[in-house]
Amino acid sequence: MNYEKLYVNEKRKRQITEICLEEKNKEINDLKSLLVESKKIELKLAKKILLSNTNSKTAINGYKEENLVCDDLKNELIKERFLPILGNDYNECCRISGNHKCDIQSKNKLLNARVKKYKHKQFQQLDRHWVSDLIKNIPELNDVSQILKDLCEYPLLSDGLYIDKNKSIKKLCHNNYTHETLNDFLKLLNEYKRHILNYAFLGTNLEIQPKYLFGVEYNNNKRIKIILFEIKEIINCLEKLDFKISPKKTTIWLGNSIFSLQRKGGDCGK
Image (cartoon, rainbow, N blue to C red; front, side, top):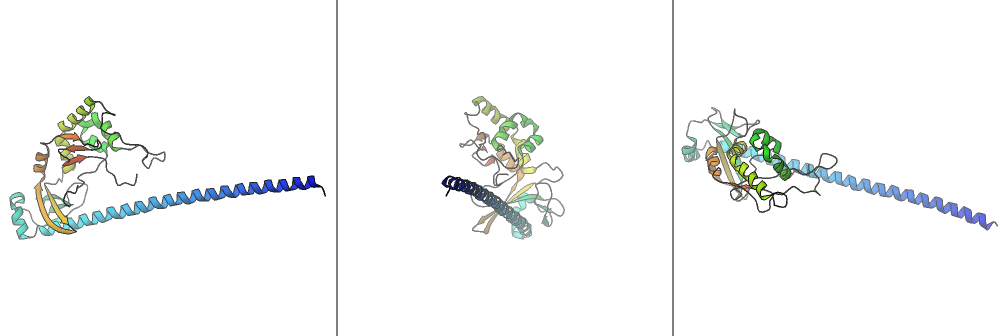
């Protein structure tokens, strides 16, 4: 028996086996990576569906509340209580849609109003826009546009679709800005305070703007109170307050956080 030849053959077989094993391991690792990526995609899709369902439910509940307020305005007792603010010239109200801030309107168009559901000590979203939209409609704020963008806009990942959560927004603190820069920033916001409030409450559609704001309070899913304000009175009241930076340096407060400017979340990183 030629032991040398046998050794060489066995060595070759072992090398071939090791190569095959390495290739199989690579295939297994590729499959694992594919499975992990697939799970990530499934998770993103599930979050997207959940967010979509939540937004849809919120919208449906909002539409329902608008219809309920229209029904409330048929109630003689409620109409009598609101008489000092609304008067009695309006007729039947209904929910309306469109690119404006009004939720309900009377058929004779003498009553235009927004409707908000709320709970005790719960914040409500009044307006949602890109920073660039705000600057476009209030160009006087252009000098602070970059500060607002750095506060609200995260850097994007290489795919250009999702934000890089490993990065952080630029807080309104002295590590990032000088004392003078922050003072000038707040001074400009306060100078054009009414412009900002009008933009948030009334929108930019001059043909149809809300005059009133209805608030409907809920407790344990039960309607317990309906309140009414004339929007110009809200704006007049808020205009007496000053903008300031929140303790966490990520939000701009008007007064003691009664009205705030901040980044909108809940977008699954988009």
